[in-house]
Every structure is written in structure tokens, then in C-alpha cells.
Length: 182
Image (cartoon, helix red, strand yellow):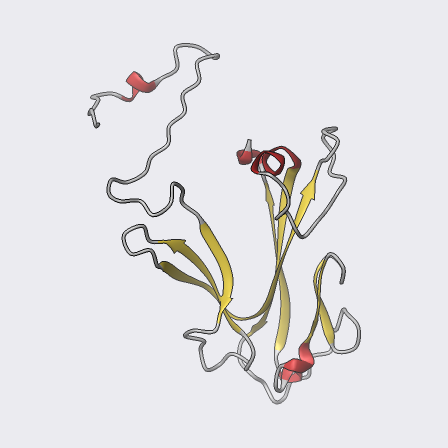
């Protein structure tokens, strides 16, 4: 049912205690009662300048009409991605329990406890450079820490990638506050 209103003031709360919950889903047959986005490294359409063994970080959303995922490329030449969740488990306002796995948590626990999300992405800048030698190893041997530590993230072994020494590897860090989960 749709009604067109002439002014936005029709929706304005009467006072500070008036709460309105608005949730919109486009018309048609829905395959899922929600919208979601998945982020992953895809081996499809990887540019030739990327090292063998890397891929494209994509955002995939469910297409309700077809049931397929619509992929949107975000970053090329990605070797690894790790996510860390900072939680406040005792509700004192300070984070006290970082984790890289929230799969056992309920939606309510995630909304109440997760205060910050940090995303770590290992990718290389540019293309292979035979005149460059990568030496900024942060993990064991020829590896790079993707995350805070090897246990709270991943100790990514670059030797699995051909000519890994001739690429400029970088760990990108994105940190997001989660006030909007409540």
C-alpha cells in the first residue's frame, strides 16, 4: 500500500519519545526477507598485472529477481582479507574482547557487544617490478601479518605467490565504529 504525502513533516515525530521504524523492500517476489552484502576475493576477471595467486576483492549483493549475486569489484590484486571485531562484553563502554569470529554470536549480541570492526587487506601496489625487492616481512619467514597478530588475523606466507619479492605488498587497514548497529 502506497500513499504519497505532500510534505516530510507528516513523518516527523510528535516529541522526543515518539519512535518510528521504517523498513523498505522493493515490490516483487523476494528471495530473502533481508538485504545483505558479502565481501570476498574472487578469481574472476583478475587483471593481468596482478600476481598469480591474487584476486579481486568484490562486494556481492543478492539480486532478488534472479537469486544470483551481483558482484562489484572494489580492489584488484588482493591476496588476503581479515576482519577483527572489538567487543565490549561487560557493557562498561570499553572494548575488552577482540575476536575474528562472530559466527556463534546472536544478532542481539553482535548489536550490543561489537563496538568496532577492523578490516585488514593484503594487496600489492602496481605491477611486478624486476628491479624491486620486497623486504618488509612482518611475520615468520617470508610472510606478512594481515591483522593485529598472527593469532588475531593471519600470518600470510608470500612464498605461495610466484615472484612475490618483485611486488610492493601493502596491508590496508579500515576501522569502522559501529554506533549504527543499535
